Image (cartoon, rainbow, N blue to C red; front, side, top):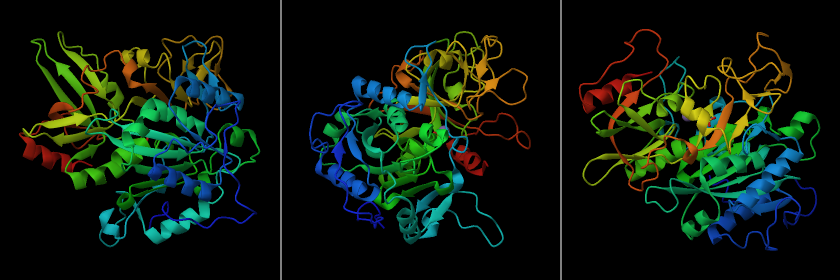
Length: 477
Ligand code: SAT
Ligand code: MN
């Protein structure tokens, strides 16, 4: 246990390299000791990761505009991202075709006892609710992957808050990553930077270690543009120590560790201890024609339309919907017994295909600036394109598909990867709820459960009361 709290063996190829601050050119950091700004516990965590992963440089992220601009420039220089001049400060990343989605089969919960992590099915039945790994197996897996894995790269220290910085419901994490794409994305998806360190002080935090798993030097265009190591991908969680270890993938929930790994998986174990709930739910406010407003939460699996529902424009006259969050809800009962929810995230990491001015004009407005697109197609005039935009984007000047190849409509293959994404700041959403950053959370009046059930159940049905609702929710597949 405690893979991050003890020194791991590493390949012996001479004396341990000194950690140098990042050279002046890409990113400026004034102090000769880049770790001087870190609280003692964070510093210890970073030093152990440096010993294990052997990065060439360490950079502590302050979250500033200047830092972000430098990172973007640096990624552009190596071809990891390209600008989308049709919009304001929007970028396109194309990943390795083998690294395009979250991989649940390689995602593990590490506990002493298997039954603490996953249900144990009867004989002959294959369990489908998560994967378990023993602490001993994790230690072996880490020793097989992490030693020296950041050679030639920069280790970025990313302090982030899930929930508004300093709010009593918020929690702090520190992600150490060797991917600048992860840093830029975490800056959108979480509250990230120096203010988080100040708020943290001596406090405890969730320890997140991420590596693309491909030390330099690498060869081949894909390895330089999008380093990853699909054969060795592993995403492991140790609830007891509040640790997350992610190796080999740079994509979405595999690498932006504040999202699924922290806000849902580690979050739900913290929540169980502290008496609250971490749920895969959107949160929205509905105002009826009489001006009465209610908030609801809704749970659907990934890529089922949570983002579209969270940004709904009602066709019923006189109704108004406002968005609090599109993916994750942290909920607890207040002292009056009212269930209250916050969105711990700071941005939307939504599926691009199918999003259009018809299906979700609010999302289209949200992603028009300061957005990182991943694996969408690109038009010749520097705009984005994906399946669902046929009626509103002129493709006559040419389209480049998500793998960088020329694409023509009707060619059979999709132009954008089906799991291509936009990563956009929530504050830019035109219908963001005025209470979306409220410290105590919004009161929840109902919970919707949804999924892909084309047959066997009615399209829509309603529970008689909360108790019946618990039964229906628990009986869903
Ligand atoms: O790739 S993510 O896990 O971040 C998105 C999702 O599956 O909801
Ligand atoms: Mn999700």
